[in-house]
Length: 288
Ligand SMILES: NC(=O)C1=CN([C@@H]2O[C@H](COP(=O)(O)OP(=O)(O)OC[C@H]3O[C@@H](n4cnc5c(N)ncnc54)[C@H](OP(=O)(O)O)[C@@H]3O)[C@@H](O)[C@H]2O)C=CC1
Ligand SMILES: Cc1cn([C@H]2C[C@H](O)[C@@H](COP(=O)(O)OP(=O)(O)O[C@H]3O[C@@H](C)C(=O)[C@@H](O)[C@H]3O)O2)c(=O)[nH]c1=O
Image (cartoon, rainbow, N blue to C red; front, side, top):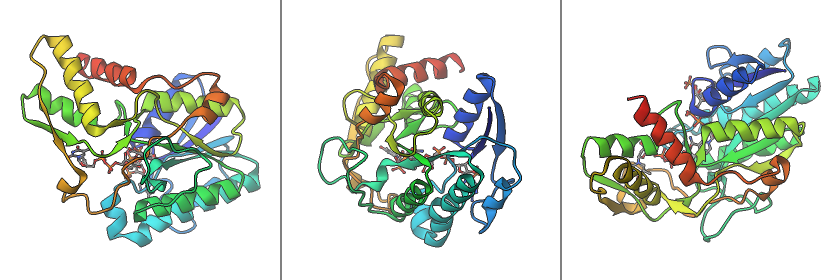
């Protein structure tokens, strides 16, 4: 299959490109230099392109940058995905677009379902929600992911691992809750949706297991290191969201997502995030 992929310099796009290349598909990479979503009309690149499915993980992912440049966030996260979706529909091509748990306000604890009404708190969340609505209106499929980590680019777990290995003091936010999503697993779920012919609508994609905080993920990492090295388990100081002055954008507190809808397509539940974190850490230690 000929699979076009945006955002291949990013975490999810790189994982998708590597996964589908390894699976024997022809991957057409559409990085910013080929398709700059900040440019109105950028989707025209699809008009003459020979592809069967478009995967669109590209996005303006810094919440603070979105607050500072709302016009750019609107163009990249909302307008451009809508334009890509229109051309995909017109040309009879399948589209999977990536969105976020931050479309929810996260006020109440518990698992968010696809049919729960979004109520974003930030420019990032609002523009991502508009983008997903535009895609679904054109018959496209959306996968909302959360707290993404993987080998392609360092994320929060990598920062904790690096600090722990250097013996530095550790701290992590303990009053914000979700479920992480591991990039190789995101790629496998994407393949599942592709095999189901991209059914349209919204799907939640994250690993399973107990809902956690960033502090909970950090503890999983220090416990892993303790078992792996025999060193005493490092302490992780608990932080609150309010202690993060760098977080100028408002972040939702409870955004763990239920994945039953994806499970129906895949025929199995996503694996536990703790297993995915351990696999990631093993790979990080081996590559050092
Ligand atoms: N990371 C996370 O924790 C989460 C991510 N998501 C969503 O998942 C998707 C993938 O995220 P992730 O891979 O982690 O993000 P990254 O920040 O790692 O990558 C973003 C990608 O988008 C590209 N991009 C940004 N602006 C433009 C532009 N104007 N034109 C073309 N490409 C552009 C970047 O290209 P360049 O390298 O040139 O800047 C990069 O390839 C996003 O849509 C995000 O909203 C959802 C929940 C959590
Ligand atoms: C969690 C955490 C982060 N940080 C730092 C690391 C990083 O530089 C910065 C932002 O962290 P994160 O990127 O993990 O947090 P955030 O920007 O909230 O991440 C979000 O990204 C967008 C794209 C999404 O859609 C969300 O699901 C979520 O993954 O804050 C800490 O210093 N301490 C912490 O405990």
